[in-house]
Image 1 (cartoon, rainbow, N blue to C red):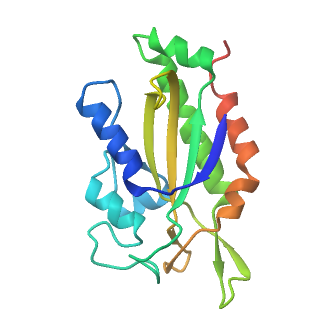
Image 2: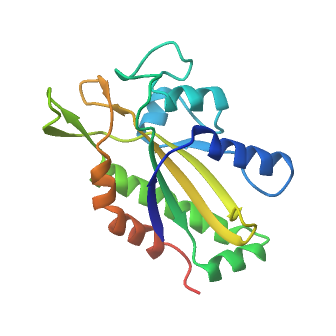
Length: 197
């Protein structure tokens, strides 16, 4: 299942993951994924300073503003949460080899590639009336094995940051409406790659 919500709190995801991870509760550190992560050389584990700077609209080191309203009140991006069915989440607890988690993560990556291919757009022109296809997106991925209520729930937050690098290499923001329009199809891509239980 896929749900999409606007990102409201920059610290929420990092603090949740770090608190659980460093308390040895089996949570994993966040990782960078997506086309723009590759362009920026963001590979592997998320560094909190880079994450916060990018969320605010700046370069990872905080020295360059990527968007006009960097550092001001702005739309931070979108939380695409991929949640495994309860039966898959329960099975994952007993999967010592990690097959279920690996299948879940492959399904999330495939769904994100689908979103990049179908829903990655920015607006151009003075009134933002022109839609332009983007080469890809920037996402911070956080995988968790339990809900905040401590219930068994394998799920991954793919935080699509509201940053876009256009084909002419200028920076802008993404058009979030397209994410919602492709939500059901992206959710199907994810579900189709999970084990049937």
